[in-house]
Length: 449
Image (cartoon, rainbow, N blue to C red; front, side, top):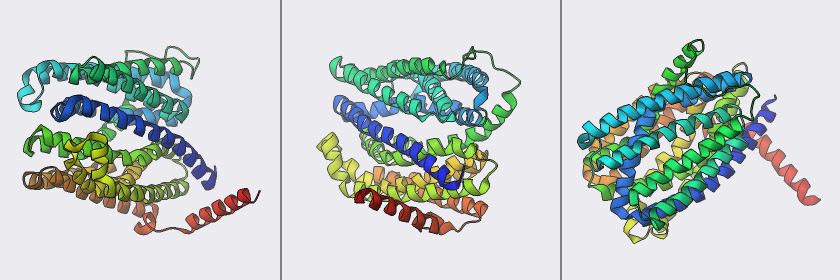
């Protein structure tokens, strides 16, 4: 496949993912509004803490397994049945271990690790963990197969289920945080059933599910899993170190609610980089023998993602306070200033995520781990210094600085390996001018018809 054809294929798949992401963005905003207006400031803070529990356990246990699913299926799509059995068994055992560990934490460490959650809510988070793990790993199978039509279908259907069930649980039945958590569990279960139905249509081989782990293929999976584990864990800690430290050093659940809402809006900017990353990871994994095409593809994708995100981020920064009041009411106006300070880091992380997916697809997730470890250290130190003085604005500033540092280091590392200049991420290249020229000529021909 030529470089131009490869870029066109990645672009088309990314646009398909982006269309679904924008749809999910709209539905996600509706869900966010329903939850915030249904639970209020205090309830929204408790809901954020409740979700942090299973999300943290998911990253502690499942980090590395999901990218391993994508990596091995992308490299061996003809061996789908064996891989599906192996990864379904691994997902089952990881889930079982997570439930046991989570139950112990809920019973014996709730006052320290889960302060603010009662025991019933903490235990309700355990089935949330199970459906998170199973849903993500089944979804990764379709990503590895480059079947983004079904991948996007599952994401869309899951969001619609979640919206309807959140309205039912929070507004109609008025079950509060419990209703919001039950909506997550039920929506994921329904979507997992759909995933299983379509998985059985991908290959005639049976069975596709199992509970026994095959030892013959475990060694290479375990190797990638462990190397990817620390990368994903470090990435998660970069994402959530601010929330953890804000919980310890901030000014209560109201601050957590304001900050979490700002982060929710800010991270919508990652729709572009996430859409591209879903395509880039398995595509890079399949390009192991063509380094020149792989490197050119990664730098081109990172450049366009950064340009697009910068424009949208600047607009969000200008409209931040107005947007918060419009969506959530006057009570959430303080989140607008926080959103503005988050924008720099959110924009630079879009390019960082492209390089993170590239290194993972190259079979080198440990390189991400080292860089992200530096980011975590800077993130924690700055948050510990700035949160006591500036609360949520300090957390936002610390996050932006650490994200930008991570992007800069990843850029330098990738550029050196590819033999390219670091400014290739920011400035147009000859290939860009040729692409724009061909696009302009094609547009003129169409307009002249």
